[in-house]
Structure formats: structure tokens, C-alpha cells
Image (cartoon, rainbow, N blue to C red; front, side, top):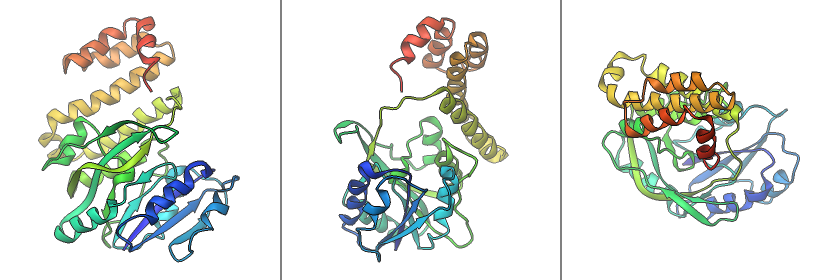
Length: 295
């Protein structure tokens, strides 16, 4: 059985579409663990219209951070397999069936993820992410993070506790999934299995600041392991370069141009892209113009 962790806070707008996509799965042995984080809209009313044997409704006593809310729900996810669905996203009908078959045929596989179709607020396709098939998914995700949380399925194991970092606001999934795939067999489905809704709210300076801090902490913890640090020394540079880029983005929002240049200076010779970013940081006007269109 799959237990599907779904967290909700005032999610009435897209909730029915998300839940209906689970009921439309060709694989039927599942149950949704639905965590209502003290919603004040009609989310509870909508979810209680579905059969209670397929959805376990839980409500927090007060509104809590997302990582903490996810960990609260994980306490009830004692099934063999675990999956995730946010309330504004959609699963394609064969998602669970594909992952179940991979788990059944590969008992050493711990985590599976696949591709995603990007949609806007109205459900219109605006792009897609097709992950690269690889024998070393950890290496790939250091160079380019490709794990869409909605596409993930995890094999539960009694000796390994699955837990999000409750302190993290913007990168708890990166923290959990990168730790898992750094040490465990991972399988990739190189085609879309979900639809991921990209909402139009832009990155705030707070989000950018928290993202680079949380991501760097995760990388520091992973590469404290000397064996991993040496094995992935090349890819590690690119992972930390991306952190530096977001730190520079934050510094530029604080009018700390020279500090941003210094942060990027370490990585300017890594690639043409980072050399270009380093040059761009010397001009706040050009930097702001380019990033005006970058969400």
C-alpha cells in the first residue's frame, strides 16, 4: 500500500482537482493522509465529501510551519510505500502503478522520482522537466536538481526514519531527498508522471535568503562525509556555486553589490555562466534588469 501525504492550508482553489487525480490512479491500493493546517476556507468541507476509508483527515491544533506539519503527517504513514501530493498539483493516472512495479521488481530501490509537466494557474502547459536517466542520480542532482516532490515515492523501512527538517521553510524536500539518494539506490522515470503548478508569486528576498542558507546547510552535512566529498568533488563545486548565486541574489536586494561580487568571485572560472553572473554583479542596474524577469 501507498500512503500519500498531503498538507493543506487554505487550499480550496485546486484541492478537488488534486484529490480527483489520486482517485483516478490505475493503482488502487492507497490511502491519503490529509493534514489540514488550521485552514479557514472550505478545504475541510471539500475533503470530507470523499470516502473516509480512502482519506484520513487530520487537523493541527494551530497553524505550524510546513516542515513540522509534514512530520506530523508522517507519523501516520506506516505503509510499505510513501508518496507526496501538494494540493495545487496533479498526478497522471499511471503514476503509482509505474512506481509500484519498479519497487516490486527492484527490492534494493529506496526512492523513485520522475518528470513533471509545468502548468500555470489555469492548468495550461508552460513547460516540463524530464529528468536525466542515470546510474548515479545523486551526481545528476548536484549539477541540476531535478527531483519534483510530487513525483517522489519512497520505500518505507523500519530502521530508517523519514523526517523533514522542521526548521526549514523553503528547502526541506531538497534536504530530505538529497540525503536519501546520496546513500541509497534510486530509480528515475524519464517521462512526466505529474503536473506541477507554477504559481506566479515571485521570489521574495526572504525566500532567496532562506533558500541559500538551508541548501548550504544540507550540502555541508552531506559532504562532511569525506568519501562523498572526494568522490563528487567536481559536482560539489557546481552545487555550492548555485548556493553562491542565490546568496548573491539576496545581497543585491540589500544593495550589497561588492559583497555579491565577492561571493561569486570564487566560482567565476567554473563555467561561462558563472563568469557572466560575476560580471553582471558589477552593475546593479543590469543585474536588476535581468532578474526582473526571473522568478
